[in-house]
Amino acid sequence: THQPPPPPPVLMGNTASDGDASPSSLPPPAPPSSFRLLSMNTYLLPPVLARGGNASCQRQADRARGIGQGIAAWQPHVACLQEVWGAGQGALEATVEATHTVTGRSWWGWDTLDVLAGFVGGRGGLWLATRTSSTRVLGRGRRRFSISNTRSGKGIQHAVIAVANDDGDDAAASKKQRVVVVFNTHLDPTNANNSQRHQLAELRAYIDEVLGSVSLALRREGCGEATVGAVVTGDFNIQEGSALFKEALETLKADDVARSPGGPAVLPPTYDASANGLVSWQARLRIDHVLCLRQRKGGSHPCPPLARCTSVALHVLQQPHGRELSDHWGQIFDLHFEW
Image 1: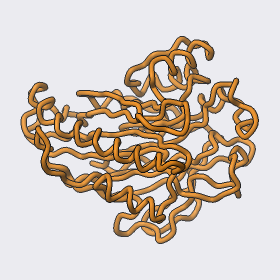
Image 2: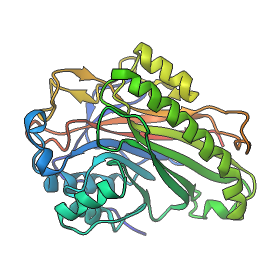
Image 3: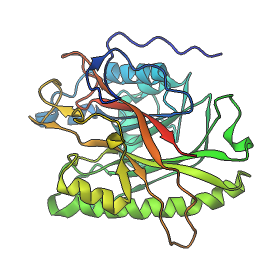
Image 4: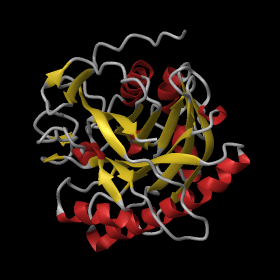
């Protein structure tokens, strides 16, 4: 059996589970039958943009390597990253290649070329990788938002993932399939000109389009009927609990997984000026989320049955001051789908 490398010593964890948000050591292995998802805004800006308000964006290759080491050690079924703009991307992907498969992998190992390839290819800084040993990607795609206050090509990507059963059998070979559709996104930094609202509407339309095509894709793969788990994650730049966040949940027909029953009463911030020296804004915010999508109706192709989802454990990943991996704390969610 494959033994993942030991966690790098610079990585620390702050675990919020069973109502406890106290600091802890590194996250334990995922509970049996759970689906582990890692999400993180990596702040891997191109060096040419690492100035002014982003002057703290340094050590890109070292930070990218540390993020990759964390992915390899924590073994998420899927890792969804934002702001992977090419800087340090070669170091990131070389570190995870023994354990994870990057969707749409395309890097040259030279930052200048990787940055250009990212912008020309319209990737919008979005990056997704799946655990090689226990997942199979059945389909994937991406789309840019048509409206944005930035020129970074923000948008959405998705992957349709068949997950192996605990005994190692491929889910695609069992009668009741375990399929998870994961959407990775990054919204504008503010709602100026209602851009975030427009992007949420486009995200909803994209989700409905993808889910409506999943049944057809599964039949082509010989998977037959399946109950599908569906989640959307990323840097929403919308504060948890705000009026716009509540509006986002309604627009997307989704629930905040972090608010699962039995979870902590107070959720830790993911952007924290009091503890993270890389931040550009003096604020403590929870703006990075994992949302479970509810059943939807209508459309030219009916949506497959969607499994309810709850969080078994939430780990907010922190590092010591001066050795931060990003200006955002990453998060690991161990999810339970009611297949």
